[in-house]
Length: 239
Image (cartoon, rainbow, N blue to C red; front, side, top):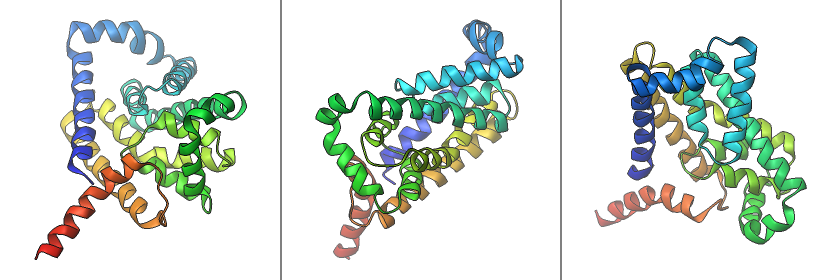
């Protein structure tokens, strides 16, 4: 992976960890907790979980990074439950985008995203489920734009949603770990989260390079993921 991608991912992990620490130790954190997490989600059982799902689904649907929702899930719940609810909230946001694009926004979106949707169609054509998983594993790209492009593509909803849910798992677990680390063993959990982020990002990049079969999902993604390979090739030729 390109170093800039890794740095951006690590910066997000560490900034969220710092935010969580401020939540726990500062007056600002106490007011935020009382105003939202502690007052309405944590310790409120099924109602708190449903409210978290609704909030997370709406916020990811309008473009809030799903990693932040996963972080809040880990902060409000345990790692396991936070991961599960973070994934379901992000999936709900994905479904809202997809349904809007497929049934309400085709005319407008096709004029703006027709080329991107066409690329998406060609990319996932032969193996829609597995290629959707691959897309979600990538450490780069826009979650919102992918959802909208899928909505105006020919992919079946079941393939896209199931592939999305599975592909969301690694990064959701990473950021739920960071959020839960605010409470217990923060250094250990953050270190584990960083390790998992690097592994999942490297896996996504590897799979993209080796299984796209000449298709391109996005020029910026190609440039970000292929630059390292180009540098290695040039170095080999110069020897």
